[in-house]
Length: 312
Image (cartoon, rainbow, N blue to C red):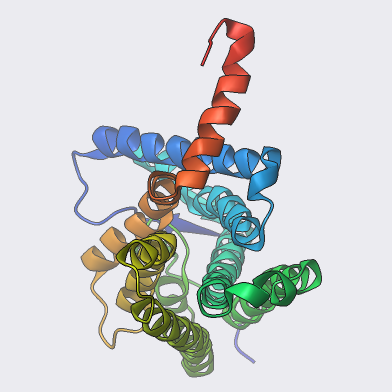
């Protein structure tokens, strides 16, 4: 039986090629992080406070806003701490927690975008039956299923990664713990964990992507059948924000997890974009391209500012 001196903490090496830029990056990431928290909280509270937004579409958008509050909070605080500190360490348990929550929330987002695409498919292709099909019970089942599915996905991956022994070295070539960089530090055969994680992430992402693609293919076909140009414009406008968010989500997944070769610099750039930038962009995407959300936002803000003497 082998004797191991097990690792109790990992050293995060940070963002590649960022020497001398730490202070600027800290301020930049802090702005994006605060904007993500406040923007998504505002979207969530607006949906909660506006009765006209209590529909399946905005119910799922509210879930996305909650997700975009949690997701950047998994890694961003530690990343910013590493930028201003001389050395960045994370405990073994903290590293496991990062991987668990990162992949739990990532899978949840994947499922959530799929459900949102199905919601738009029903709304565009079967408008007369929309409220019957997308009833409260189905929306609740979809929501519970997305979060539960993400939890199972994250639990399986975390168990496979951390049942392996880690006996040194303990330097993680990234600004947070993720499967590819942590697995390379294991002092045992990682083929099973690599195969299962690659297959698991690949199957989930590919299945969801194909379902989203199928939904939007049907949506486009239905929109092109609309005779009035105004009707087609409104239909495309309804779906454009969601489709933009999908592109921002699947791009990083493909570049980081489904490439045969790894590039530390590219991985860092993509992961920063995925962790910090995308969650801060979603409130802009959904508020700027949606008249109902913009109108509800103005109403909520005006009501909030009235005690301060603001008059609409």
